[in-house]
Length: 363
Image (cartoon, rainbow, N blue to C red; front, side, top):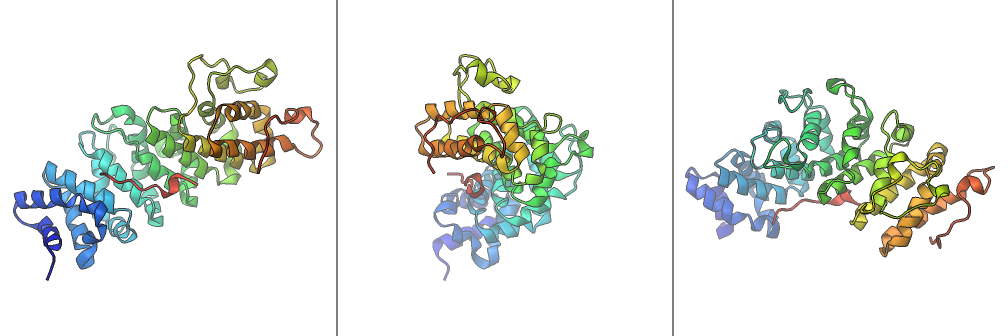
């Protein structure tokens, strides 16, 4: 015989609205405490929940919360990603400027991105949601939500910050990295990554963290490093360095060659407060030293003095280790370099991943 909880799950598809509402409300807590409850009868509860997001507002809210919490499960992810009707329903609501639960929809997309099947999102075409976007591609529309929706600029009830986690996981795949580096003819030939990197100092920690990991994962495409470093293409370095900098002053020798945006910073300039985000930026810089061109560029724009200052102002062990690894590479120099060409002698005592595993839950 089914348990009381199993019977409660059955009420998710009851014909009476009030009963469905009571069932959904009482099952929210079990979506984190006992998520397997929603996988019984070949995921029948998941099928019910996918329909309930279109139900009356209180029911839809609870159904979304449950789906967010159980969507870390691989079977549940497959059930959602293989359901084109559900995906379209999700995308339609995310891109709707009046959708009250857009953030929860974004959380679901972020969790679904843990599945490699998420790359199908790169090729899905749908109706253009004007004036949000000019592109028929779902991924472009989501990026427009992320950019235009920051701080409630598109939908007053949503900030779309969790889409940054989706982008970070998409960038783990070759197809995703290709998307972020390729100018979009549907969007005035804008390079998608340039829309994302501008948020490295945004006030939202969620957004900054997701953006940092998107950038880092994109940097695994070593063949595109020259485009990342080029001011005419992506111009990434300034957006990486500024979060690592505080209000400290540098000598004339240190500032000579430093990026313009990294000079004459205001006295109230604050360094990134989250150590894990700083570590991610340091890992990204280390990835950019994979080529000689990258190492020379980082030396030329005086990355070393900035890392030296960061090291002296941190008490976090992981940040210190990240600084040490980067300095080892930068101070090593290239064959034939003089001591001056590698910024003189190192001052640090040199000693010898991330967003990709983050799952969103709603408590």
